[in-house]
Image (cartoon, rainbow over all chains, first blue to last red; front, top):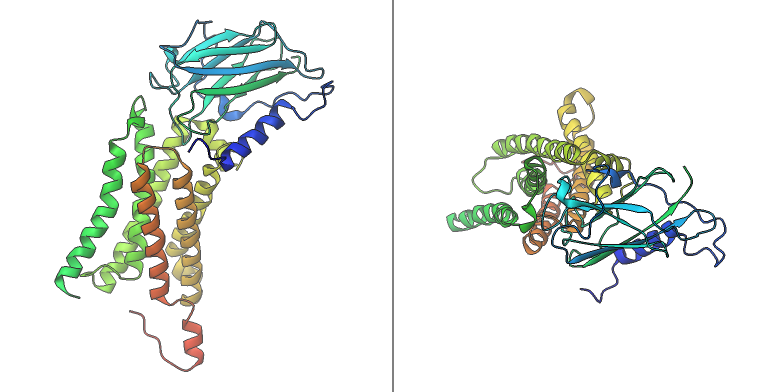
Length: 158
Length: 210
């Protein structure tokens, strides 16, 4: 199953490419901001605390945060993460946590294994700190057995 | 029809409907889910199971059921099907309104959503057409063909919707039920001979409804 390139993989890849603007040349001038996803905000609890990891871990949520226009990596940005996992429902506070991007604008947070809910395994991420416009993301997992999921933000000034 | 064959057909239908439901009830994905979301999911499975009964009843394929009783049960199951779909969508709405808005507006990131929404509208249309059948004053043949076309879209949409979903239904029983639903629908349409009626009439033969 893992060796198969599914339609979902290609669609997700295309969507990710479109969302991150990776097709834009190296200078990345005019990098478009990531549109917020309506479904991304479901069960959002504002101000999730910054944590070492959510629950017992075992699954990695990763991603990048860049600035719209010039594509510069944004350090120290707070990204909130939650999902339906082996340890709890999306709405439970214990399922929520936040982390900060490093100097390269990258973030990674360990969390429990995401399990399918609402038809397909997915995560929720939010940038909602005020300096830039709020963005909610709802990335899908190609397979429920994946142990990592990536989501990329391109933020525009609020 | 021999007694043994009748019993076997009824047992097969009972198994086709109940085994997927029992298998889904044992799904590990049910953990942490809210009751309304669980009800919503099972309403969806019930709707798929009713889609198996509907063509069987419409074509009078269930042994021991007189044609009139069969038609009456087709209407009752049709109402049940609409109620199951309403429960399914309402439960999903309560669980996650933004995801349902995305689905209804065909902007959902999950590909299975659109298939489910199409099937929802066609099943509603098929049911409304049945309710207003007399008042619409359209030819019975035309009515039946439109009703069956809507039913076929409902079946195809529902099957694709179900197959694309990673949900509480166990994979093998889900695929099996979907194949049976498609096969039974095809058989019922063939038996009803909806598209041969006109030609037969032209050839001067009489056609009697069962």
